[in-house]
Image (cartoon, rainbow, N blue to C red; front, side, top):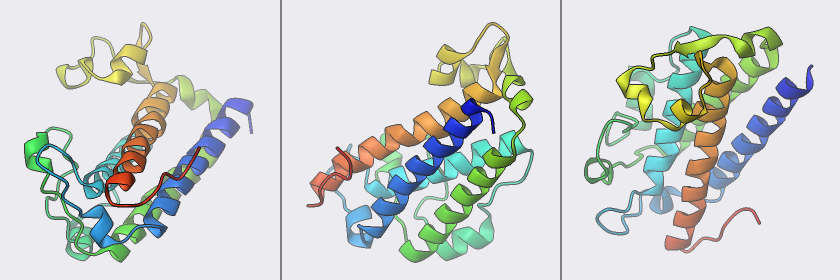
Length: 187
């Protein structure tokens, strides 16, 4: 496997392992804890990131998302939405109903992404996923700042939409763990 893809696979697996450790070291009272207005619960970060990875990787793979009505019935999210286009005031009410089922959903998404990355051909990394001019919904995103002259490539999308986005929310989760009496997970 070429160095870049090998690095992406290892970094993705490492990041996913942080989420798995976080899930294993918290319970429903931790993730659904309401600190105060304007502070999103850990449940938001967990579902938002996992569901956004599901949506992003599905788009990149050309496959339907893992999340569907059956998963919603099992996981019982208070708000059946990743919240990307919603306000903090709305998403502060996000809660996970069945934590074990959520963990299963997260593992299904992470496993699918890792398998896909392991099978990805190096040449695909240069494919332009979102050509310029970038649509309004994308134009003000971090990935728009990363995009090259032609637009957002597969590599840009994997790095921004999946990997860097995941690290951002893991940082939020680590900080929020302190609000519920738990420590950070990395140094």
